Length: 536
Ligand code: GLC
Image (tube, rainbow, N blue to C red; front, side, top):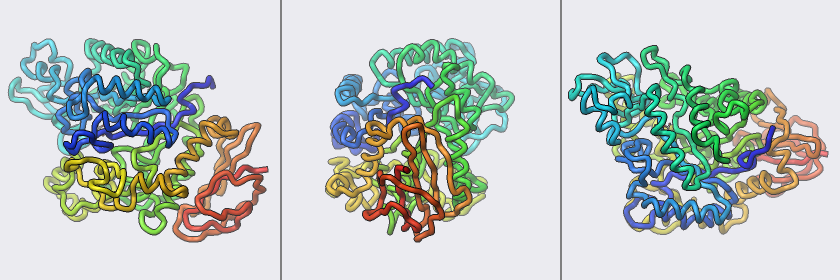
C-alpha cells in the first residue's frame, strides 16, 4: 500500500462548545482551542478533528449549519479560524473540519428560499413531497414535516430543523463542491464527513443509508475537491461492513481516506437501540474488531472508542470507580496497538467518565429530548425511569460535559456558567492532576502515540499484520502485531478480577503496561492489566 501521512497520524477530536471558553459566556471557542494547542502538542497528536464551528442556530450544537462559510460568533470569526490553522501548523498539527452536507439548518438561506414557493430556484435544493412515507427520523418521530406555506412535506432524517439536501440536484453538488474548495484553500487538513452514507438516498424507495448514488457522488466530490489536495477524509458511516469500507477507502477508487465504522459500538444495544442497553458480549467484541483488522485489505481503518455521540468508554466497558485508571489505560492499549488511524475524543486521555444529571431538563441533547417524546410520551415503549437508565448509560451528553482542566471554579473551563453542567468529579479527574502524575492515563496515551509515530516499532504498529490469539477466552483480549522486524504481543484482561493467562510466550522486552511490576512471563493477569511485549 502506498504510504500516506495520515496512516501514521493520531487524531484528537474537539467538541468546541465544551473544550475551553475564553470569553466567559460558558461556551468554548476557537481562541480557547488555540490556548490549548501546546497541551495537545505535549500529548503528541498531529491532527485535530474539529466538530462544527460554522454559523448555526445550535439546535444540534452546530450539526445544523446556516452558513457554511461563516464561523458562528459563539466560537469566534474567520480570523480566529485562520489563526488556529496557522498556530496548529506551527506545531505540526493539522485541522480537519466537520463537513455536514447531508442536511443544513432550516435557517440556511437555501432552505428559507426553498420553502417560499414551489417554483423558487432553491426549491429543489431540498426534498419536498405531497405525501410523506413512513420513514422515521433518527431523533424520533416522522422524518417528514408539513409546511403550510406550500402545502408539502420536507424530508429530514434528523431534527425538523435539519432538512436534508437533495443530492440528486447537480446544482446542490456544485454549491457544496465550491464550498469544500473554499475551505481547502484556507489550508485545512481535511474533513470528517457527517453521516455521509446518507447522501446517496432514494427516498421514494425508502432507501436512506448506502443508497445507489452514494459512491458515484463521492467519486465526483473527490475529483472536484479534496482529491486535488493531500488531505485526510473520514466518513461517518453507521451501516458499513468491511466490504463497503473498501468501496470507500480503496485508494484506487478515489473516494475517502477512511471511514468510521460502528459495528463494535452497537454490540451492547438492545431492542430499542441505545436506549435499552444490554451487557457486552466480550467474545463478539473481539470477533468484530478482529474482523475489521483482517478483512479490510484494500482500504484503511479508523480506530476509536469515543466521540461526541457516544458514552465515555471507561464507564461503558471499563470500570469508572475502583479501576478507573487501570481500565482506561487497558482500553487505550488494546485500541492503539491495532492497525488503523486512532482517534482520541477530548477528555478520554484523562479518563473522563459518564455523568448523571438529576432531571431530564438538565440534559441538552436534541436526540435525548426527541427520543423521549417518541419512546416515552407518544408510544409509551418505556417508562420515564427506564428511559433515564438509557440516558445515563448511552446518552450523548455523557461525552459533552465541559472539559476538566483543573480542580478550580468550573474546572477551569469557563469564568462564567457552563452551557452544560460539569461532571462533579472534576475535583479529582482533570488535566492538571493528570500532568502532575507520571503514572496517569494521560502518559499512557502519550506513550502509545510515541510508539506509533516515533519508535523502532512504528512500522510494525502502523502496517504490521494482526492476529487474534485466545479466541475463546472469556476474559483476555490478546493479539500479535508483526512484520519482518518485530513481533509484538498485546494482552489485556477485560475484567475486574484476577484471571489466568493461558498463553505460552517468550518475551524479549516489556514495552508498556498499566501496572508497575509487570514480569516477563505472567500466568495471571491482575484486574484490567494490559501489557505490550516484544517477543523473541
Ligand atoms: C452525526 C453527528 C451527530 C449529529 C448527526 C446529525 O451522527 O455525529 O452529532 O447529530 O450526525 O448531523
